[in-house]
Image (cartoon, rainbow, N blue to C red; front, side):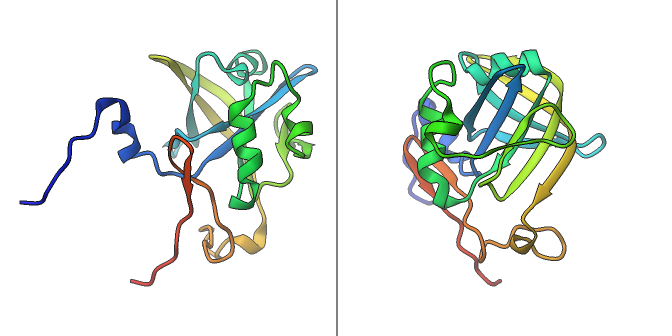
Length: 182
């Protein structure tokens, strides 16, 4: 039998929390913000639905409730400082795009913006919301998506030899994937 060590319930989510980090951008009238999200996933193929979990206290959640739409942005590792900044400070108090040197570009299918420095963007209309403890799961219907062409294989898979996505390992720990042949 293998040697196991107990993991606290408080840290147990870190066993499954190594996915790539996203930046969620949202705009409601003149108010806008960007927040860092580690907890997200696809939840339906037909219709195409994506979900992310936002802390109930987040300004971005407040704006999504108002705007009924949001944009998922895929940052690469060289953007780590901006990603940490956007997850640390509140958009209620600071213009995150300005302070993190991020370029906001109008979306094509929703009233919102994407982050030009990111390698891909997924525009979503709000489909549903589910309260889940201290977070709310926000589900969006995909209305548009785009990505930098040279970073993807012909069948639409991210080429990790060309781009290093940020993976959240827990706390202030981040990593990248390494390509391996099988």
